[in-house]
Length: 219
Image (cartoon, rainbow, N blue to C red; front, side, top):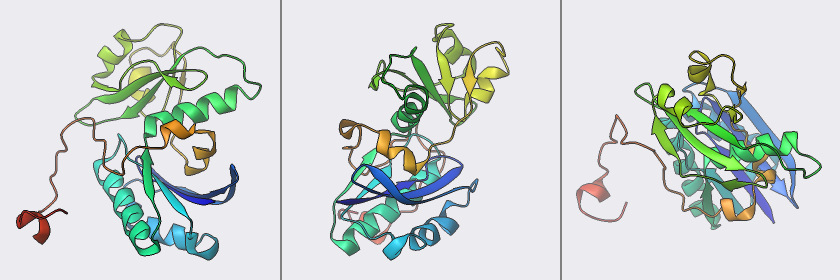
């Protein structure tokens, strides 16, 4: 079974086709806020236009606009192709990628915290341990509070670590962005979320109501 993975939760935009546990084709670009312009074109560049038997999409937390672009595309393609769509967390994907790169032999590693850029000067953060499991629910915190919540030995990864490094430069940081190709490292239990946004906090901008919503019908 072939899976199309869509990743748009941060400044990176990436897509991947996965079959039998390996990546058969992928695209990855750092686009900033250009997900809407690049995502469909990147999918079209994949073999057979990215056609797959199932779709997996990042539900967040992360960029409000990026998350909605990715989920809208995933739902639209799933409807057109008649295939199922499910989601995963950007935090879990980054944790899986970090553990997968550092622990190819299956050895236990120190706990890590995934730290993503949030909004209003906050970061999204969640702790993980190897083999991949969450050690706490994700939270949205000011960088100072995030540092206070972490042990000194905890490795921090993600695109939000720069805010923490500006306060405590002697800690262990690694800047990373999610990549759809890393979904091969994600245990199946982390890839069964409903394809709905995980915002982490109330979005600043609220989308205009569609005619269906305005009429009180399901969107």
